[in-house]
Image (cartoon, rainbow, N blue to C red; front, side, top):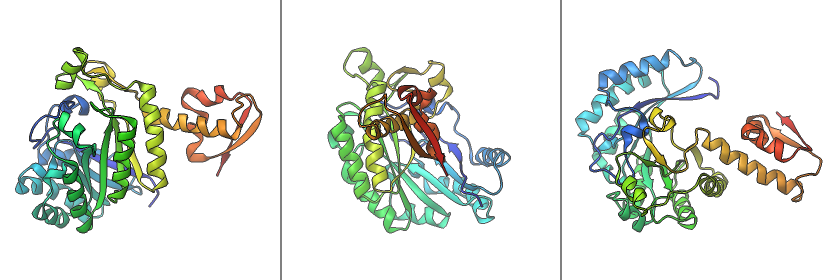
Length: 319
C-alpha cells in the first residue's frame, strides 16, 4: 500500500446539533443542503471508491452536524454501512466529528464496536468567555473531560479549533493550541472564522459589533499555530474551510479571511520567513536553498511569491 491517504467524506450538516452557534450555517459551509440517509451514504462511498486507487489508505469520515448526538440506533445505521467496507478491508479506517458534550461511555463503546478509530471534537476554542459569546453550549472543561474519555477508550483524538471568533486574540488562540497539545490530540484542524449568510454573526457584522480577521492576520496567526503544532507532532489535517460553491460564488460568503488556497498561503509565508532568515534579512542576496520535494511548491510560493521576492535564490529539490 502506498503512502497516499484519501478520505471518503459523508456530510450530515447540522444533524443532531442542539442549537445554532452564532457563526454557523453548515448547509452553506458544506455546500450541501440535503442530509443523506444511510442508504445514500452507501452510494456516496461506492462513488468515491470508483475514483480512488486500490493501493492507497482509505478512511470513511462522517463530517458536519454532531454525529454522536443522534440516537445510538441511528448512529449504528450509518456506522453499519461504513463497517462493512472496513471489515472487508476495502477501507482502512472510520472516523467522525462531533461535540464534546455528546461523548459518553455507551456512545464510545458503540463506536468501538463499529470499528471507529479516530474521533474529532469541535472544540473551537478553549476560552470559556469565547465559547459563551458564540453560544457554543459547552465549556472548556467538557472538552477536556471528553478528550480524556476518548483516549482512555483507545481512540485517536482530534481537536478542531477556530480563530478570529468574537473576543479572540492571537494569544488566546495560541493558548487554545497549547491546551490541544496537552490533551493528547494527534490531529487538529484550523478554521478561520468567516461571516456567512443567515447567521447571528452576520447581523453582528452588519451592525459593526463584529470585525473578522483580515486574510493577512489569519495567515500570521496560523503561521504561529503551525509551528506550535508541528513542533509537538500534532498533524494539521486542514487549514481553512473547504471551498464550497456558496463560498466560491459569494452567495453564502459575506466577509472574513476566505481563500481557496489558504493552506498554501500560510506555508508560503512560513517559507518566506525561513528563506529571509537564511539570507540574514537581505532579500537580494544570492543563495541556493535545498527543499524537500514535498515542500517545493510552498518554498517557491503561491503564484511564485517567494521566487519573486528572492530573485537571486535557486531552489533545489532535495529527495
